[in-house]
Image (cartoon, rainbow, N blue to C red; front, top):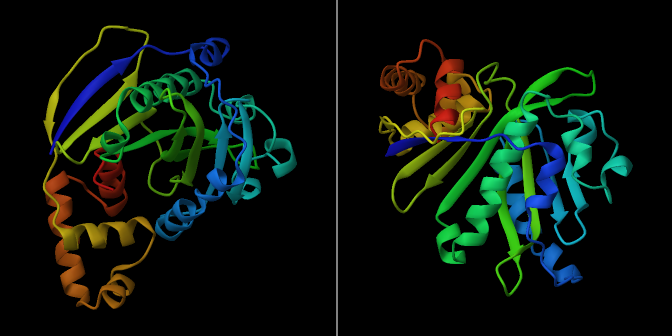
Length: 268
């Protein structure tokens, strides 16, 4: 798999909402929102750490449903979040990361509204930036957009946002977005800078076997080698061999660096 780096221009908060072409169809169907339940359930089972999720109503620009551990991971109360607009989350985003996160979100929406549904299914998109926790300390999160509902004209109406705490594996680095194209075996890394020029650079992503990825996912969840061995039904030494192989492939010095690099490269 190859990685292509792209640089985007930052987006100011006051300009973000104006950039969207709103759907004119006000879809008020509970069945549509209920259809998101299997997706949130599957993501909850795969989450590498604490998480929360919410569904955005892009017609009225409000957070219409949420779940998970919102109140444990942010200073917000559920009553302060539901029915409110996007500014609730923007208010707790790190000021350095906010214009970058908005640029990534706009790029995501543009991709979503430009590609056919069959093509979107081949793309995995995730954002990485910092928000405040209840102690008013910034920490790193991974934001995924696993499902969206479009109108007949291809405009977004609803979108599911899944937020995972990755502070145990990512401590620093720039805010970024990854778009992994499974059909083309391509990973696009989006960064944001005041330099508006688009740059591209091809980088090799080390091949990771299916078993190595299984070990990697459990490492990302904080499991020790002995527990991973039990869960996968293999020897502890085999787990260590897989871990050492992945350290060499990614030129990492520790498991935490391995996990951080793997997230940045879109391996997990």
